[in-house]
Length: 280
Image (cartoon, rainbow, N blue to C red):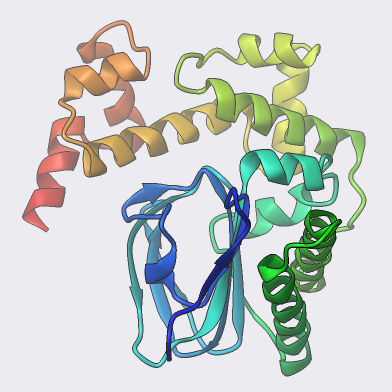
């Protein structure tokens, strides 16, 4: 099938028929924009946050900015489409992602959802409308594109929600978790103290950890540690930085402290972790 590419002038919202045609995603990559993938037929296999995931026939996957994608393979018989939305455009179109957290927590580590035919047809119909609109150059086209993407986003979110038993309305505790994750993503490279995040959120460290444990099953400290370790693993795996440089980038006082921290949480030293990767 011939690859097709359509995008807005600034590429803030873009649609593609082929993964190879996406100019701003080269693997390995850390997503700086939202990526929605629909697989009609065929298969996609990708390493997402160091775990291999597969999309098969009639499936959808939504990845928010921040996910790391390593290798990505598309089968020759793949038929589907890709939609990307830049972070700044996403913030404008969807200024409040108030419904997302209950489902993104559940599906963050396994974002692939199988669909039925009606769900696939619904997403495909919106995609076709979006693709046609992106090619237009008329007054209010940009507003129409933004509205169509919003419909597409909530249609996809509805598919995720239908597979979940969680309530769609967030409680105050879920809102605290949402805010914590946002602050964590911006600061985890430089801040590992629970008190820092508690101060930013105007709560006590004890309250923050208790609420996060109740809502997500992990305390604030466990959230922080898991995010730092994921980043350390990605840097050891995908960059040429040495252990000292990674230690500095993650704001550890020295390489020795970083090594002890890493080994305590993973059971192996940073050097051994990298050595095992090269052996594999």
